[in-house]
Image 1: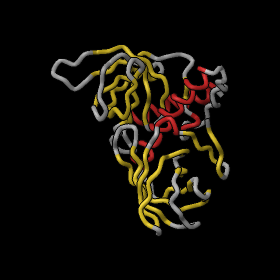
Image 2: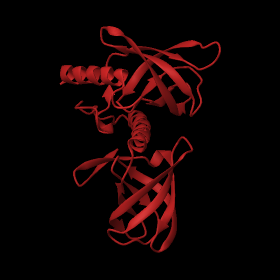
Image 3: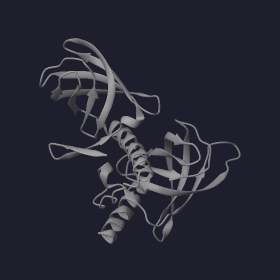
Length: 236
């Protein structure tokens, strides 16, 4: 489920039960992350805050990593919680949030399927926002190679992809924080080889990973961006 705040969609992440802890002007607070976007979040907590107050907090991600954020309080509901606008997120931190949102969207879609209320997938635009993830009607083949002495090749299939990372279905048993190499098909061009870090896993389904690009001018990054742009134009 997604809600809108000041024109921007926020996505429910309640199924992930992500803890949040931090400090307000009134003292320490603890709570649960309810809704999340790349620019802000709503925390379920009894902690009192003031409008435009700056709070510092840590969010426990599904990868069991703590993400430190600084945010400005934009709204509050007494004895329910408050919403913040993130301040000064790095590109890496945004990439982590993208993967969390992708994971949450998958869980929400599965829940809607179980009740027969799955809505139509969002229209593809430029792929810069989690709501515009490419959910391919055709599934591309994918090879995942681990970093062992005798790497095994496991057939997999891309499910969702963005410039920040991807989720793919596979029976391969990987662990969070593991770094692997992937061969990604790029249209009619030879596959590109990229390095990714596993961010979360779903047993018997697959896992999500973030790309470890070598800067903005990474050739493989540019090739993937071009391919995604071509696909977006084709779909639209």
